[in-house]
Image (cartoon, rainbow, N blue to C red):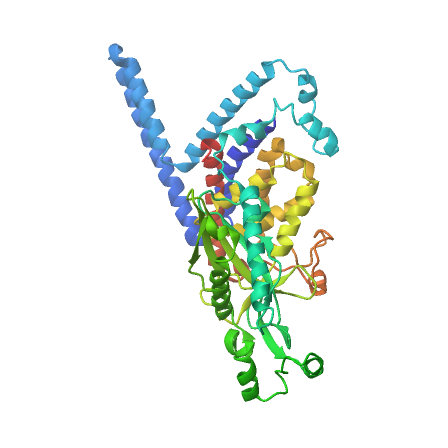
Length: 515
C-alpha cells in the first residue's frame, strides 16, 4: 500500500508540477514551457495520425497485421519516450506493477506473522522496540525492494575511517614532539567531520576522509576572532588576529625563554629565531595558505617515523587551504585524507576553519565559519536514537547523487534532511518508510524554493539537540536564510524552480532504473 501511494504521488507530482511552478516563473520562462507543451501536443497528434493510418492499412494486409501494429506502437512509444514526462510516468507505472507483483509473491510465501504484517503498515508512531521486532518480517516492506533495486556505492566507511583516525592520531603525537619547544601553533586531537565520518559519503571511487585539527596558540600568543561584517550572511567569515602577551614573569621563573612582547626584536631573533608572526601570519593575521604549507611540511617530516610508512606510500596532493594527502598500501588500496585547521569559538562546537568556500576568491587571511563538528555530533545523536534499519543516511546518499551538476548544493539537501529528522519521528525513517521520506524531502525542498527561504539549521533553531554546544549568539539569533540570494535575484529564483523539476525527474529515473 505504501508503495502504491508513493508511485501515485510521484506520477501526480510529475503531471502537476510544471503547471504549479509555471505560475511562479517569469514571462520568458513561462513562454518557453508553453512552447514545449505545444510541441509535445503536436508531436503526439502526429503520432496518433500515423497510428491511425497504419491501422487502416492493417485491414488490407492481413498477413502482416501483427508486424505493422507492433511497428506502429513501437514508433509511438519510441517517439513518446523523447518526452521526459511521458517516459517518467510510464517507467513509474512499470515499476509499480513490478513491485506489486513482487509484494504479492512475497505475501504468498509461508510466514507466521503475515497477519501482523497486514495490520501494521501505518504504525509509524509505535515504540521503537515493537518496530524492531517486526523488522525481520518484511514481506510488505517496499524499502527492501529499493534497497535491492538501487545501485548503492560499495563502501567500507567504518573500517577505513578507523584506519584514517589511527594514522592522523599518530601524526599528531609526532607533531607534539617536534613542536614541544617551538613557538608555533600546537595541533590538537583531530576531529572527524564530513560525510564519510557521518556515514553517507555519496561516492564510491573518490571518498575523502576529512578531519579538523584545532590549533592552540603557542606560548606568549593569543588568538582573537574578528567577524568580517562586510560579507553577506550566512557565509560568515572571520580573521584570526594573533596578539602577543607578556611572559616576563614566567620567563624569569623558567629561565629559558624570552618575552616576545618586551624584549628587543634583535635579541629575540638572535636567541630564538624567526617568530610565529613572521612565518605563518600576514599583517598580524593567521594566514590560511601559509599554515597549510607549514602543516604539509610537518606531515612529510613526521611520515618517516610512523609505523605505517613501512607498508604504505604517502603522496601529498595540491591544496591551498588544507593539507590533503593520499596513502597507498602494497595492494594499491588508497585512502584520500584532508586535514583542515580551525579555531573554536569559545568552548562551542562551532569553529572558524581553513575549509574552502564557494566564493571565487577568498583572501588567505579569511577563515569561514564551520559547522562541521556540530553536524557530525548531530548525526551521531540521530544514530543513537534511530531504529537499526533507519534509512536516513540512504536518503542523503540519493540526495547527493541527484544534485550533481545543478544549482543545488549537497549542503542544501543535507540541511533539509536535518530539519526533517528533528520534526519527523525517527521511527518513520525506517527502511519501510523510505519512499515516503524521499517524498517528504522533495516536498519540503519545493516549499522552501517557492517561499525563497531555507533556514540554517544551527541559527535560532530550538530543535538543535542539547548536547551540541552552540555560542550564545546562535541561540538568540534570527534564523539565517540559505536562499537569501533567491529573494534578491528573481532570475535565480526562476532558475531554481526549473532546476527543482530536474531534481524530481532525476529522482524518478533513479528509483525506476536503480542508478
